[in-house]
Length: 526
Image (cartoon, rainbow, N blue to C red; front, side, top):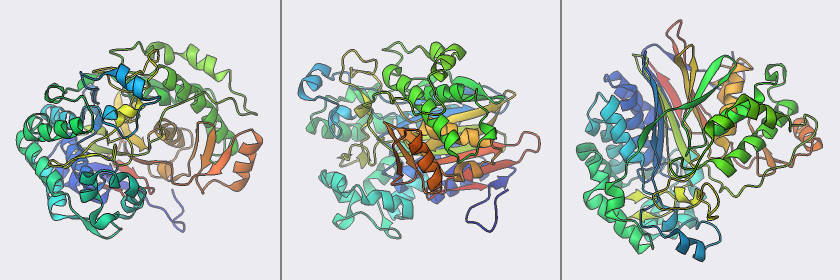
């Protein structure tokens, strides 16, 4: 139990349903859908739609989605709602013109998969009509919503980027500047598009005038996208991949996502008695950093679209492979950092929902970088992601750019299982930080006995690309010890990620929900 004399928050408890999102308006809408008799998926979709409006730098209908859903007493399924590169993409021409993938180019805009995923998930699980799920988001976009502090903080760093595109600037920089906290912002074109999706479903986005608006804009920008690319966009049901850790099973989405990375990390870490270590001590942080180096190295060399590249999932998750990787860790010395050219990005929304029947949803939606490509389709208000920036131009790399190929994806929802039943849908935002953050949060719970809120409140470290960044809650003497071990250490300029989670107590029936204080969001239950 937390010290009530210190700043913090308690888990939110309920019996009939719980939600946790990165924004209070989205959490309120999700709870409203549960109280109206909606399935957990109804609440998740409605909340995600709201977040496309109120956190447009983190997510949007011009992005992608991954979801894991555990039905009460039923199977656990995963949906890959990530988009593919256009069929007419000339990869050789891109290679000839660029040394690396162009960050803010139409070539880095894959066909958005989020709306198709929402509609497929709704068809499978939904109890409430789609127009009802879209209605709150439509109202916020059309009538206005109050700008929250963390959203405004992130927005201010994107003025130059948004200013490059006149359509994005007109909507996202009212008066020529980022909206300040406490101001009111509107997105009328996006409101109309969301309303059409509510009425017409998938076809409202991938056919007709909205698709024409997107394709016309992408062609203006030099893209090879066609109406056929949008008409044929389709996600897929996939079998979750997993490992065991401290008597629990952790489920992740398979490649092309990076769900393999936390599984490999936990396989490496499972042989250490982490529970006996100071949770914010140098020894624990060092082991996490070293495990991450190895797991991320595997990601950067092997993970790609499995339809077009061989990804040896079974081998990468084997105990023998974990043992081999672990043998390279020196507990008294920092090891080498594998080379990586993966782009940095920290802009995603994650949410989770559990309904009165015990259905659990782990749901993540993203436009990759903050405001994605920074490019907008003018009539529909769709902000395009730039997920294709994750492709490599090396023709021999598994994740090389190719037509109709999905890039390596960083967004990863997670589901923790105990004795065959879901006990924690959870996720951590922050692109590269997500696997590290998931492993850290899970170890906080299973190794150190923290509740769902404490596990998110605890200060965070992150080691990536040869640099270790520590949040200010980690003591200076710990930073000094890490430096002695050979790590390059600095203070994190911004918080590491964000997170949400819900613990399902199968004995009492109580739902315990937590939300990361690093974001504006909250958990709610009833």
